[in-house]
Length: 431
Ligand code: SF4
Ligand code: SF4
Image 1: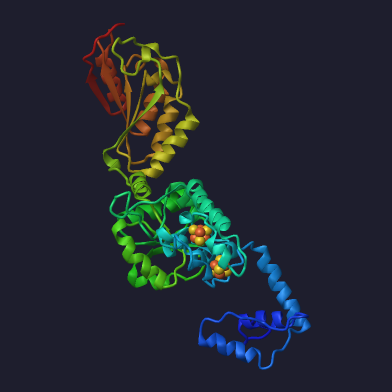
Image 2: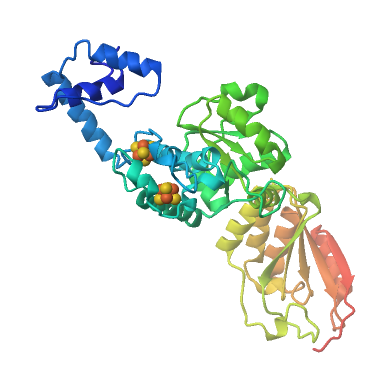
């Protein structure tokens, strides 16, 4: 319409359309200010009916708008005056129509809560019907309000939105934003091409790491009040707020003022969960144990692995590679200790290959294999000793009260040039 008649108001098209209809003698136009009066006077001086081209432009526009399935509210405000609950009908319908038109649920979600105060939202309508009498568009207002209320409630269920108060008092609703739990939050993040994180402290860095490494969501960068202008004010960009709740009320208006339309808020719970998940817990001191064989060739009464009653079962090489590979990734190859044990780990004939994999995946980790020593002097153990030497594995022998040549084992380890430790077991033993 603007390209057809750049200097005409949109309202003038409506007036000319109505005045051009056959059998229409008088056209009434609602006017709220002096500018609108001036506009109407110029349109009627003299009135020029729509040309055929303009008619077809109008039909095209009508077709596009009808496709959005909006509510035909003109935001005149007549309906509000007699509403006993002071429901902000025009504002609610405006937000809803924007949502239908731009298909941006996240924006509706935020705007509805940001711009319509809680006491004036659709949920307050008591279906008295007073507003319907006033609406020049004959809109079934209570029906539409109910639909919007249900839709908002549906969002809450669907993406698990949690509305929290600033101070933790559940009676004080936080007027502005919505907080998203993790699943809804990630779904929302994936809607935008350019994501920025407000802040840059440890929790926000952990959030960026989580989004990029675990979820494949790219973060453009961190922004703060002085760098906010670098965020494009368009529908494809969003700013994530993952700060302490108390800052939200300060930052939110700033973002709005700069024209940033999409703002994603994290729940306190989601923030803490992500930080906990991503914080590396001093991997240098961490010990991870892997059981190479569930069962044992001894029968200790007080075995805390319950090996005497365990079915024979061995660790799987492929699973080991995948699990230890992930541990290596998460610890940035700084895991302190990997213990390989059982049952009796040497019952697993693939033990040398497990040692090779462990060293390959964790080049900086102390590798330690715990054994009761029963098989260490067997003639077919050459590959094991060789692997311990090559991959720098400590053999930790637990001394049980059994007939075993411990001196010979110690000597064997020395000759094989393998690091060797002995631990005296103080347990009830039953052979
Ligand atoms: S139907 Fe609802 S919105 Fe309309 S006047 Fe009554 S309470 Fe207000
Ligand atoms: S009276 Fe009708 S058209 Fe006017 S604001 Fe209310 S709902 Fe919209």
